[in-house]
Length: 295
Length: 224
Image 1 (cartoon, one colour):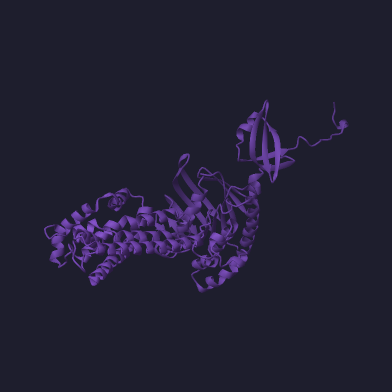
Image 2 (cartoon, rainbow over the protein chains, first blue to last red; image 1 turned 90 degrees about the vertical axis):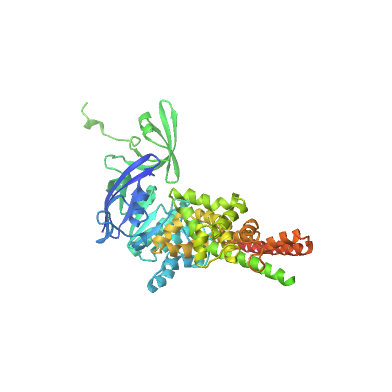
């Protein structure tokens, strides 16, 4: 059990944000931090890892105190059992794939585990290559394997897949799911991608303006029960055009483009690049026998 | 005469080598401080390090000479401990270190500031201390910056004239380096000897720079 209760004042693009995070993470779960940029997701991860210091509060992992402002306890990142995967991979450029992993290993057991991890991320053939000769997806696999060498209690993934193309993303999502189910390591993921979140996570923490607004399963979050459409699609808004008196909204749903009409009110709430739910039932024919209706 | 030529050349390169080693040892921590520190004091430090780039060497030499003289506070302290820096090899080393400081610090500082912060942080999250990270991850990563710093500092010390003339004078086998010798030989119209010094310096520095830049290019290609 990881219990976090911290505050920190953040200087964001939109001004000062007083973040306050309170969350309990279950051992072995895959939790995604989901929300707009600048909400403090990455800061929360960095505070857990010790790369950033909260202004106040407590971080406790399996009964071990990692941070406690009132008791002046603040373990440095080196002393915390974590694996951190960065968005820009952060592979050491002068070391080969295997050397990157061996660098992390401290015990003989961990050194022996290196080859197994290389095999797990399918990099056996590239083990002696320098990072400069690898593709983005391969580099991120090295980073992932390297973060697992020390058998951390928590694996922290800070938008690890956002710089990759869609097919590589999907492949790595599958690998992440596989690794999580095989190693059972408690995993925290920062993501903007709905498909990724639904596919990978047990629970979702919605982070908005420095607060965790909702903690629930991803399905519960993305298709709230207040909507009872027959058909629900989640898509990314690509374009909003005015075609008086209505608006035409173009969305990307999966890999297909969907165009739909929206009222001025609806359109004003949509933002290009943001996600929206299209819910429809009006086009379904509804058949009701006439004689049941008393005219 | 031939013997004097050899002593002078040896002294020249000895001075450059000693200066470069000392500069490397103080240059790396100093460059790291300038690249990462956020204190207000940083711009002052940056200014002091860069001063030798714009200051006439004679100014630096003049003040060092004053500082080394037994009449000054520092000089008095040194003399009372039996150390004489003016007109000595040790004095030349101190002058050269100060004079070539920016040539070592700037390439390392710029290479360090180009290393993404996540590289440092990745190493910390893998349990490695700041010093271990510096030695095993960062220094190999910025080796082109280190090589540039070493070459520039070495070459600049070989070519130094003004500071040495002020604080070292022209004592054979103690402070008489090649650049001083050239000036001296030309003054006494001994052009053949001056030419010997000049051509040697020309050829040797060209060769060093060529070798290092060729190697550096290869090692850079490995990184890309």
